[in-house]
Length: 321
View 1 (cartoon, rainbow, N blue to C red):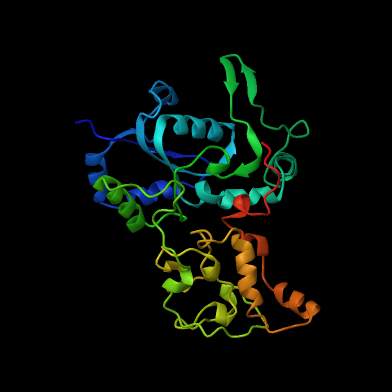
View 2: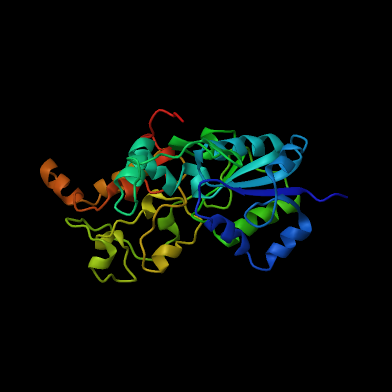
């Protein structure tokens, strides 16, 4: 009996999700025994044309990580959707755009203007030259992907069957999903989030929370925190109240505030708005000017509240390439 076919692909990502797959340690051998890995370009020499030659819906499971940043990312997203029975948005970038999605705070032209014309580390020639998608060379034409103006999550480009959150997803959660698939049990409804919990990160955190009122916020290096007390109670912005459970609150166990990589909790549309709501309940002020002064102490609020979710939030701009 032929083994089910597995594909893994990375688009605009750091590669952490690929490493997380290997972090299931010796169980990767069980994956190899159970699946025929037909596409995993980060690990083996696979060609796009080999995938294009496959019959549609030949691949049983595709774990697709990374956001959609350029034309190549989008092309392979459509290709893997056509060839896969089950397409999974694997990790924060595929789920919500991730950290690459913070580029939506600016534009492609502004980014290029800095990198190719205004960066102190770049030696410009002829006033700066932007990348060209097509260039004629003596050896032949060179074609490179077109960088998009807007970073998108995977489901803003193609239909997605399931989601596995995390930056990266935790190895035990990855294995639990793979193990469930291998068990032959009926899959959950399409659109379900797998490998995560149904509460918030705060529900997993062992620190004691008393919901103290705050008049000052600190960056983690500015104070010495009590490892037994809620970080938010100590004035450290921790995304736990606005983040889905499932990671085991590993960051707070390491005395680091939750960054929000598991996405919003169930029934929450906008993670940043949820966090602002949580902060509004602990700020010890009623005067608008005083409230604003307290909030101004939070460094990089967009990068804090929407570090992983900006591209998929209610703040996203009109979706243009």
